[in-house]
Length: 106
Image 1 (cartoon, rainbow, N blue to C red):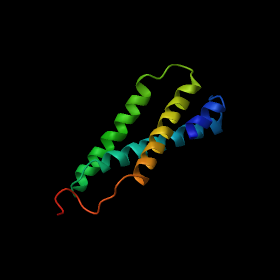
Image 2 (cartoon, rainbow, N blue to C red):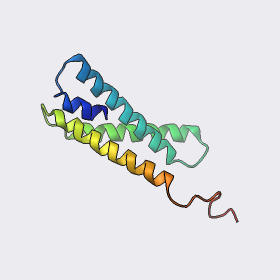
Image 3 (cartoon, rainbow, N blue to C red):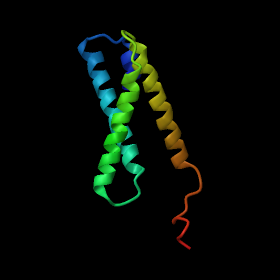
């Protein structure tokens, strides 16, 4: 949402849009890192940290790889994508069948 607000303000190098961009990037990296660390099902903390860091760096590289020069709506587009994916994840988590155990819990 911060990147969308950044795009609506027109981008630029003013302090407020710059702060919104930086905070939005930090939140995207944190979300990607948490998502990646959640993919590891073992109790190995080192593996969770490594996969979380790799996921955050992958998200950063995908966002920055195709950045066109002087385009404030580029980050806004990624902000919309992140908001949609987050919303879908929240809806999917709330609905559905929740069982108390896995396939081998019988």
